[in-house]
Each structure stands twice: as structure tokens, then as C-alpha cells.
Length: 441
Image (cartoon, rainbow, N blue to C red; front, side, top):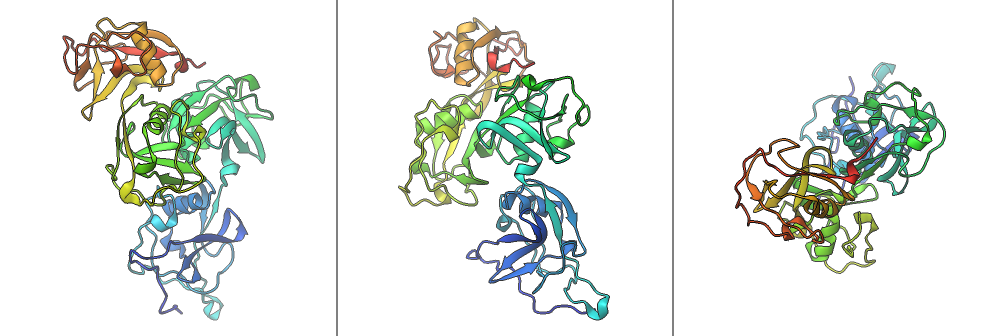
């Protein structure tokens, strides 16, 4: 068997150039996988390429999720060299050059057609373009809008029957749009047209694509376009902490960027916490407090006024003010959240204090208190102020008791209370809230 010798491999030093990838012999989102090694494009052996690698390549190229990995030179035999190392992507990297690589060759793969019997096994796959599997329409950005799916070559909508945050989470993850902020119904983003492809969607929340979720069957429904489902995803995420604390990363185009601590202030923090359903900012932390990010540092400055509902509504500067590296990545800790309510706008009230989430006692808990929490979390009007652990018993400290809000406070922690950790409660008296933003059909 003929084997190519002296094959080059990707440089492994810290000064290595970023790996680039392309698809050849098909379309922009399908073809033979080739990666740039130094100054030459090299093919990849199908034995050294798996589903996780395919996920990253599709994402890197803005092509959504992989549909099929095809070996045996399905898109034709390449030229030049076959790469001598193995990609070992975890599947969550934003670009191929962030993937670990092996330092040794596991398989003998070759282009040579020696005696017409030995064919090279090139690694090939087909991607679904982001515009070709699921999309969000009429929401003002690619990460918010009416949900539409492509089936049999035609775009159609999704009925809002049983539409909830688990379904929204799958859509947001599939589109690379961060966390699900809201699952909206009743054609919140306008009525669509064409077929209604999906109804009674029931996702567990872990599915890789919306099409993998349970449903009635393609085109089977009892809906009309006045009940089209929609999703609002976050254009921002917090990494390396919890859902409501971590390194700030902003979605720009198809990539996640970290933010320089010198270009991020209290108003920006207010918007990030609100968008993620995490209340108000407790602390803005610089100097990579939640670890150094990967990829690029955003080169513009957020100039939020503080009242925007989402980060992509904030103005930005057009010039770079500071020369920042990942040593300057900004982090954020937000304050209030709902737990165990089935949506981001209902549940047991929990507040963050001294780095630990704790509960609020239901003594004297009323609609004025609930109104402050609903407004703080961007969840509309207060519908009900519940107590007696209506949303289940929590754990950890009871941080607030005898809360007394006037109703005009910007955040719950500005309301009068007995003092941090001072209470005469037990776990059967936790306060909860139901806001208008949680009422879906």
C-alpha cells in the first residue's frame, strides 16, 4: 500500500496561525473537508473525523448542524497531502482552530490510486445551512422571531400548542444564539404563511435540533397562523460561572466575542442581567475573574443606556478605545432569579448574596414586592404574589424576610427588609411570584 511520507502537520506552538477550513466539490455548506496547513490545503482522513468535529466545522462556516458524515471520497478525491494528525473537537468550540489535535498519526490514509485498487478515504460531510433547517423571522435579529422550519423544500411555521422554554432552548442552541430568554406564542412576531409543519412540539431540551423533538407529525395540526410560535434568544451569555454569573460574551455574526473590562459599565451590566432573566447586576468584575476566553475580544464599545431589553438594541462605538487582551475579559454577577416555575417569569424568588443563592421568606409578601421582581426581571406585570413554598422548597440560606417594597424600587434588594440572613422562617414559607410574561397558551 502506498503511503505519503513526510506529511506536514499543524503547528502546535502558541504562535501558530489560526486553522482555516473549507468545503470543496459541493456547495458552501457541503463538500470535501479541507484545512489550511501552513500555506497548503490538506484533506482529512475519514477515520480521524467524527460527529463532534463535524459540529465545529459547520459552526465555523456558519452552516448550522451537520446532517451526514460521508467517507470514501464522496465529493471526489482531493489533491496534495492528507493531514497527519487527528482533530479531537469536543463539539462546543466556535471555530476549528480551538479544537485539540493529536500529535501522532493513527491511520494510514493516502490519495494514491495505486494499481487502481487503493482509494483515499477523505472525510466529507454535508451541513445544513443556518438558513436551511430552522430560522427565526421578523424579530429584528437572527436570534429572535417567529420559528420557521424547512421541510420538503418549503418553509413553514410551528404551532404554539404546548410551546415552552424547553422547546425554545433547543432552537436557540441549534442556531448558536445563547440561552433561551422567552418562548412566545399567539404570533408574537406576526403571522407566518405557508404550511404549519409542527404542532404539539415536546422537547426534553437536550435535542440537537428542533426536528428531533416529539411532535404530532409533519403537517399534522389543529392550528392557524394566529398561533405561530416564536423564540427570543440571548445575544449574550455568561461563561464559566452559573446561569446568572460568569464571563460576558457577546454574539456578533456567527462568533462569540469577549468584552474588555474597560469598555463595560453599569448600564451595560443592567441590560445583560435583564436579557438573561437574572435581575440586576450585583458586581462587575474585570481582569478575567471568570477565566480567560478564547477567540476575539470585541473591538467596539457597548454604549447601553441601561433600559434596553436586549444587548443587540444597545448602541456601539465605531472605534477601539482600549488595547485589550483576554487578560481584560469582563465578568458579571447578577442578583435575582425565579426557580422551579416552568418559565423564566414565574417561580420561587431567589437572590444572590455573598456569592450564594438564597431564598426570600413569605412573611408579609405582597403584590408590591412581586411588582418590583417582575419589573426587575423584565417579565411584565405582577399577576400573583404567592407564599408557603408554592413553587417548592428551596435550599441554602434564607437571605431576606419581612420584605417591604413601595413598588417603585428598581431591584428587590433595594426594598426594606429585616437584614441579610435575618429571619424567623423555615423552608415551608418561601416567597414566589407569577408575572404576566409567563402566561402562554
